[in-house]
Length: 199
Length: 140
Image (cartoon, rainbow over all chains, first blue to last red):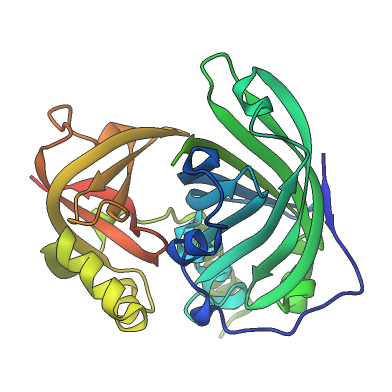
């Protein structure tokens, strides 16, 4: 499944340094919701792939923090840009310094809702088709996204949520110099995978 | 300069430049052990500084270019997280927040357990719910 950003609805850039951490997000989740319906992870995985004839670039981050309230559907994840890891040092340096400007915009974040699954279904083994809508903030620029994804409950009760997103760097104000334009794909595939545990 | 000499000099310069470019392109990512340690402190103190002033702590411990910090603490949890990585969380006195240290599985000493007092070198990447250190190495 793939998620594409909705076009034609841009929000103004905001300095990422003012983003609240996920602890604050927890406070935003409705108090009425039962704690038993809240899930979180500190070890979520986000990987992105840029494939061009010139070279393939892959970055991985295993330190994604996410909270999900099944009752309300509220879901949020945040990631530190400098925690992305690459095979080659040069890729990592260009990613941080030239494109993501991670000293100025140290975090990326998604805030939204995950729909299509209930707390009762999470008690049963299976794979459930879900949808996600919300705002994805990268490089200080928020864009609304809508997506499809999967939530899987295995026999041991482990819950995994996953989805693929397609992100265009230019939509988030990321400028790619002409000299390396052919080395970086215009659409980047971002794979999100969270293994949630009850809070 | 004779033509043959010029060609030889030109080819030599091209070979050196090409070799340097290839070496630079293939350069691997450094681990914490390869970087200068800019601070040595307890896990509790590290979290406290980030909680008090995230911007100042980020400037100090994350820095503009990659740097290492050395952190001591007691292991709260150890958990494999896939792709050959292990996350070690250090106690901070705050049950909702810790200092998480990501290791390559082979780097984690076999003697480490929950409750062990340890010292790690890591590259601080900032604060989410925890202070996050990556590419960590144990300090004997």
